Amino acid sequence: MSQEYNEWYWRLYRWVRWELPYQHKYIKYGVKNLYKWFWVIWKDRDWDYYYIFQVLKFKLEKQSKHLNKYGSQRDAELMMTCVRLINKLQNEEYYQEYYDSRPMNNEMMHRCQAQHNKAKRLLFHILNERIDSWWD
Image (cartoon, rainbow, N blue to C red):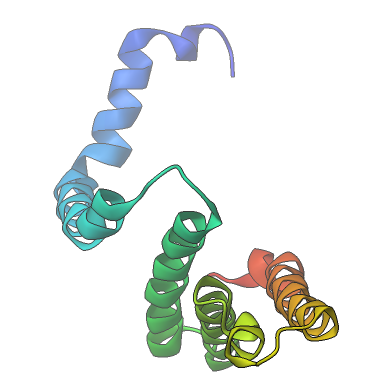
């Protein structure tokens, strides 16, 4: 684009022509998002991976519902699989067997840790392979 079309009046013209007619929709959608995300952000802390997973889980749940309705059923199922994996990682379900066992031994601890790490690898493998195609 030439220098002339980068002047402020051309940028203003393009904004008025192409963006202004949709501003009411953008504002409405933005306010809805603020409402939906309020409690997720309110409860967010900078302490550990639990809260990173919480944000990711919320986003995946929202997008899964949207894709289930308007897009790919398979992608929505994969997103919900990721949500279930995140729940297991957050709740440390794989360590529950170790905590419940008496006496606690290292072999069981290593097995539980391996299951936990396998779930984490699977979660990020799914995200790595499929996230670029998750749009409607």
